[in-house]
Amino acid sequence: MNFKDIQYYHYLVRVKNFSKAAGHFGVSQPTITNAVQRLEKEMGANFLIRDHSHHEVVVTSNGSQFDRHVANILNELSVARQDVQHAKEERILFGLPPIIGNYFFPPLTPVLMHHHLMDRLEVFEHGSAELLKMLRHGDVDLALLGSLTTINFPRLVSQQIRRYPINIIVSPKNPLAQQATRGVYFKDLAKERFINFDEGFVHNQAFRLMARANHIRPRTVYRTNDVHVLKSMVAENIGISYLTNLAITSANHVVQIPLLDSERPEFLLSAVRRSTTTMTSYKQALWDVLTDAGQ
Image (tube, rainbow, N blue to C red; front, side, top):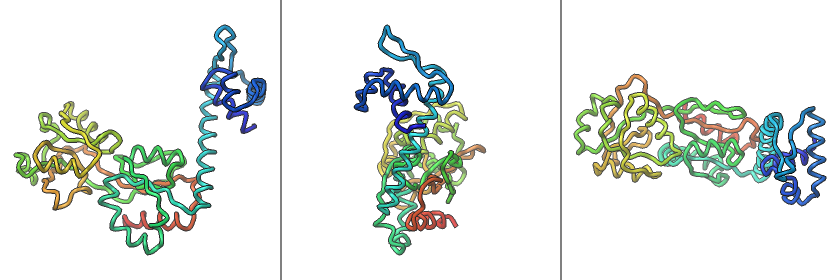
């Protein structure tokens, strides 16, 4: 199977026009036509039907199914190119969510400096959901990720490092603070004002999960992507929040209240990499430091 042929085919399926596909690649229209015909002959199926009245093509069910496989092939080839390039440069593209970067990662830096790894890191700071996508598409090599369940995707290697409870946090001035030792049921928070994270944070998944389980719709009065802003607003008693205790310190002036619900999510912290990543000595050293941190 010719690599160019599947590139032509994948783009043609997107634009559904032979002339546009030919123009995009700077080749003649017959070049695109011949590529499709070779693929159809090799696979023994018709992929496209020409719609002469509209100057477009119609993709058959076989053609759509084949294109899904082609998309995966092209993505894997793109990831492979990036892996090879990163290995040659001895850089490590490292994904680090804000909460993990602020509260879990700093104590590891002396060990990383000892292994001469800090100057090898190019850090990408996003929420765990976004970093997981970047990892799967080859945009980062390794990442520390937060999740509610074990991270289990094809071609990914995941090792859980630690797990942390997710608690309700309130201001010491909030009447709920008196329940810090007793705990609280999530359903009893239905009328509270919540300060939550923007989309892309694991905490939003946990919040929605608890709301659905308890058949309530708590009110969100403010959203932010900054954990420091979130805790400051809670400390000022503007609202309450739902936050992993990984991100809580004594200097935050907030009170943690454990949930009494029998089914309540935890914040799982894992080191994750692609199984196809070329593990240079530096990447292996980083992986070892990260995974040893849970022992």
